[in-house]
Image 1: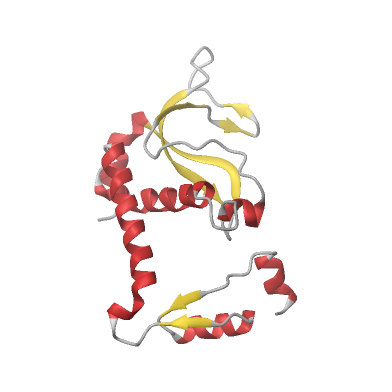
Image 2: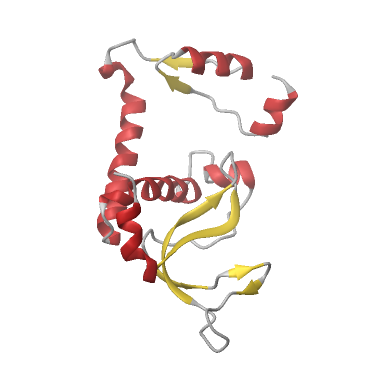
Amino acid sequence: MTSAFQKILGDFRPKKVYSDCAPEYKKSLDAMGITASSSTPHVQQTNGIAERAVRRVKEGTACLLLQSGLSHHWWAEATRCYCFLRNISDIMPYGTTPYSKRFGAFKGHRIPFGAEIRYMSLDHGKAVKDAPFAEKTSSGLFMGYYLYPGGKWTGDYLVINTDRLAHADSEIGR
């Protein structure tokens, strides 16, 4: 494995990777020195592990949308939030979460998707207010976690202002 891949993967090395043997996956996995298990091409039933993982994410996303009361137009945000919450919450057979194994303990708050929260807008570390005597915090809905490429949390939360929410839904591409 080259040093670039070692830097990206760190101590995390998957034991098994399941794919449909698409050429781009095979080339990438070969370059990283990872052997892939594959399904039988064009036979969906032989890809049970991957299909179950996709089903779990779809069901989890649907659950988050239902519980939050948000429309299906927010499915992309709900999916990202669901996957990250699983990554920081599920204890694996090796005794820790996937996130903590790769990046160390998660130091943020576990917040339900769509939860109403109070937040403070910051500009260079200072609170941004609409008027000098206005509240320092605004009402918003929690939409997820802002991540670096590779999945490490930046320390920032994704929030949509509730005053702007009525307009935001109509602006989502359909």
